[in-house]
Image 1 (tube, one colour):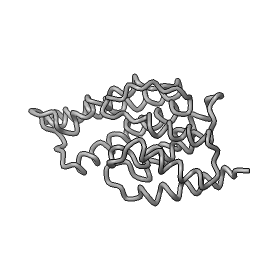
Image 2 (cartoon, one colour; image 1 turned 90 degrees about the vertical axis):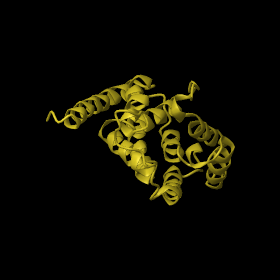
Image 3 (cartoon, rainbow, N blue to C red; image 1 turned 135 degrees about the vertical axis):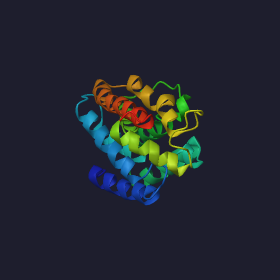
Image 4 (spheres, rainbow, N blue to C red; image 1 turned 180 degrees about the horizontal axis):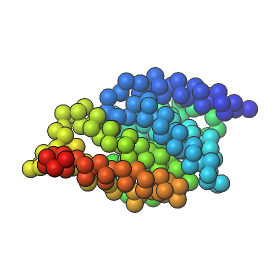
Length: 204
């Protein structure tokens, strides 16, 4: 019989080994925060399988397209890893589905998620992109790719990223709990931007 706690512990070790120190904002601590939010939403969602949610949250950035991998690469890596831990094929498929379908992909991902577990992990992933944490990650990523903090005559700066993606996420949440969390984080970003422009213009 599968030992769920052991599977989760080995998965944490596997993911930490692959993502620790990653510099684009998709590092091990991002995974930890997504797991924490996903677990909290799952506990409050009766029909969700918490084990699948946690595995999906842990593995959602493994072999991601942003690192140059394909969906097939991710399926193979996740399936091989979980198969060695004797995770059922049904759960492996559910986790692969999460990893292959929740990404924002620059707004190009129009796939409608079919499982509550995927919806929860997507909400948790998006929550980590907004609010105080999202503000920090946006500027960290901007520095990583040598993007200017703000350029009023360009849209290739970190402040523009708020309007291209971050401020849109509040209305893209799948679950009621995720939407409630997102609203609070959205308000923090709006307040930050108001302060940012006031400081930029020397008003405060």
